Length: 230
Image 1 (tube, one colour):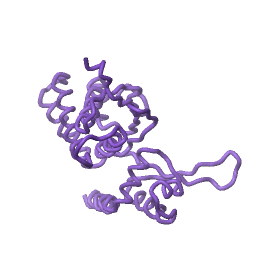
Image 2 (cartoon, one colour):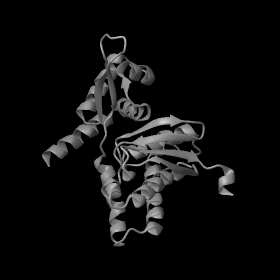
Image 3 (tube, helix red, strand yellow):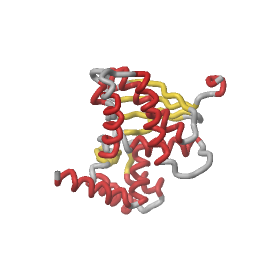
Image 4 (cartoon, one colour):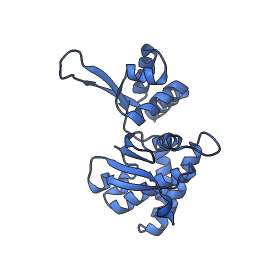
């Protein structure tokens, strides 16, 4: 119990600084980055960025590895957001699953609206301003919201009205083996609910899924075209 409490304190301290929180968001969005790249993007000195990154590593929110260069020389130290769900995310998913379990058998009719509602509540918490959001702002808020459920979210690719995200630690892993279709349905609806709360009518297309035996969950979150709603 003390170990869990100590880690919670470390996480709280790590995220208390706006710059560190912004750096963690950046790692989730960009993937592995060197301290110099982080410093240039965030606008701080490389030594300051390194200090923030090391604190994120100590809190278990980030990890680092070494990348060797084909031409030789000293390998580069790269940081990335660490896999693993936060306690808050686990509670959110547990509450959702508890309601489903009360139904005794997986109920798709209940599951989708419940997951949408849960995602919408999550999205509202991470919406940073009132009024319309552009797609870039919606994607940023989506990543922050999903980061509360899984610390392993990152962006793989994006376009003007779509973004492909990867999750290396599916929040519905506990039911994925027994009920893969239900797990995928919940995951898609959760993301669509988040986007709805951010003012976007979006659809989620599954590319790969841990529930289907893939190593990661990859999904494309795409704004719905007007002709698709007509």
